[in-house]
Length: 158
Image (cartoon, rainbow, N blue to C red):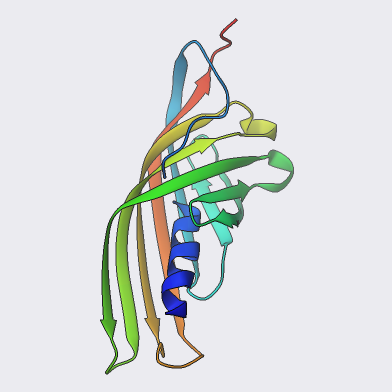
């Protein structure tokens, strides 16, 4: 089902999360809680992402794979987000040609550049999506993802 492939790629692009932070450190220093919000077209990959907390910016979610995204905040820098679903509930109605899902998972943020160089963190996300006209080629709908967790700045290990 084409819709299922789009669902995995776009819903977990954002938030999506098991990974390893990109830089080694002796100790992590918590600098705050970060929240990422994404609402996009069900049939498209990526789209606008809003960060609030330490990173307080609007950027673009660039889908790298089913489990990795880059949140690009332009001249301010970018972060890599790796994500992994823990629980998913789907509902398909072939009679009504609709689809909906809820997914919960974890993410790891790493490989910051620019203003976010050295920042890393992890947390949980929830993705919710709804689509109509799924029996044909013109499905329409939205995916909303909210991810939240602590953000750390590693200290120099050497």
